[in-house]
Image 1 (cartoon, rainbow, N blue to C red):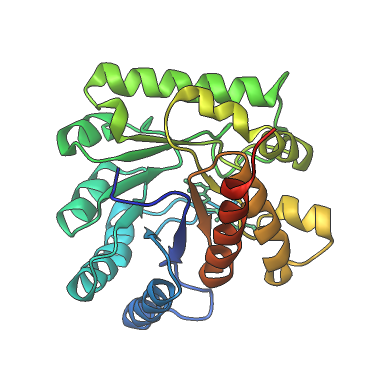
Image 2: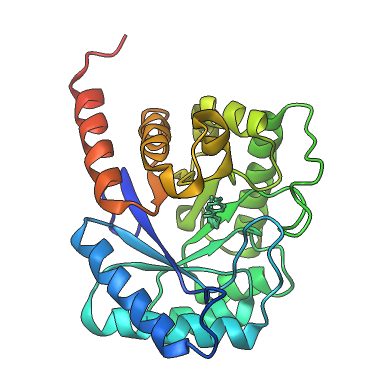
Length: 271
Ligand code: YH5
């Protein structure tokens, strides 16, 4: 799917304004485009363009604002590169406009559960990444609770895959993602990553986003700007557990690391 060689790196391209620039829509677009060029040069297989912050506690963004942020960036990348683009959104209108502008994958942290999202994906017949989240971004970190996090995340994703197939999305169009950090404690994230191989059972390629997330801060003691090594260790581990796409901020380093890990894993005799 998507013509990717697995495992591959999905570069994170946030088009959310920082708190210091207001009215900086063009500045944001230019910054995003420069970052996109760099990630392409660094070996990203796909770029994930997002205009809604889904960090814990983040505010809701209107559809128009999300469109204003992401569509010009997708068009600008498309004008100069063939790189596959994914749209990180849960809103049907944004999915539709992004695909019309050249995006080839819908990355939905709400797994097509928003009103109209499933019907839109079926209509577009676009590949979709279905992610697990407990709760919503505003409140998800308040008291995440699971009896068995690995079993429950796997079951949720299996059910969503079945619902997508029943609604008319071919199974080959679907990817699954355990949603590292989305309604999970650090201990639950560790348990999920340590047992990522279990998700292979679903039969869809596994995507995972661990880059810079707070669980890595909890393990390493590092601040968010100093988590590259921790992120790469987690990415390598995920690849060795069968993850096919790694969503990452530090594309160049992550590409090198997973290439080496994959080369060594393939050359081994197994046991
Ligand atoms: C993901 O895992 N994550 S946005 C908090 C951080 C650092 C990074 C410092 N979109 C995923 O990247 N899509 C996001 O703490 C995603 N899988 C998929 N499929 C959150 C993010 C981040 C949050």
